[in-house]
Length: 361
Image (tube, rainbow, N blue to C red; front, side, top):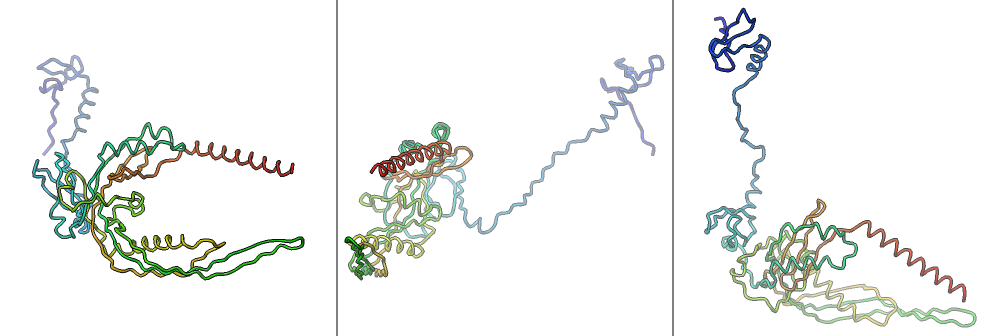
């Protein structure tokens, strides 16, 4: 069947015909005239038009892995009905919709209950003030960092710690020397005496802390010490309300290695200080025997502050009990270069002065 083509008036939609007098296409309804070329272009534009196509590709290439699903937990806020999604180790948090503090009791059922908790003594405002004080006196800190950086996130979190108690029987052996020198009119003399030095004794350790969370770097948490355990109280879930809290994902057995490292280092350092009066001392053997070892579980308060500047994130941590603040700061390279140059000049002047005095003598 042949295709039927009609010409419609763009203005009123009526059928138009060719008018021989005007040599144009003319609408008999509204008397609008069109030249052939204009109508042709209009017709071509109409042919280009397409019907709506507003389909969406709703499938995604990314699928949750089983290991990822196992890491997540979902809860419903009893205050507003909002869904709270968190990590499987989260014990306390707040609803993202209404801010209501919540405690995931189910998360506690499968783990050891904390023996103690040190409650927060300092609030969010104190953490902000401590960060500003942390900037003070830092001559090589970029000036614009203080002015432009904005605290991106502040959160108070109870960090899980394992506390190790033990008595240590320590035996140490050192090789030491005493050197005496003298001279006469002909010779210089050196006399060296060698000694074997032994030290034995007992030293007690109470509540050596080891971070029980893989989220928190051990060096960061240890830099916040000491925590005053005299202010610790028996654990109650009420202390967690309004703060974040994680349960441990490093158990006490896995923490033994780090506890032993800390105990060994502290014991050796204490005994090393007793070996005095020698020219040189070399440690040859160390033996530490632990007795009456005991482990308790506690939650310590920490404020974490994230700030962003110049496209880089900076993490700071504050002891939520005493306000001790730690964290890395950016370096003003221009100021550092000037400082280094100035120091070099000063050292050069001092060396020149000393050499001149020696020459005079």
